[in-house]
Image (cartoon, rainbow, N blue to C red; front, top):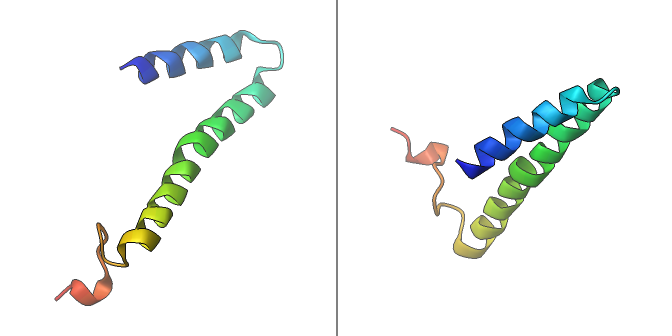
Length: 63
């Protein structure tokens, strides 16, 4: 809930700025770098530590 409030308020502030087109791109890039890429890297590290099939679904497990 707190993250949702922060995201909407921050995007509202970005849209009030004169160069909002560039800032909104940077804002969403920062969100992706902070959340998406860090999450993918984190799961990759966990997968390397705990093994290939921990928490994942491989095609050979499918019928």
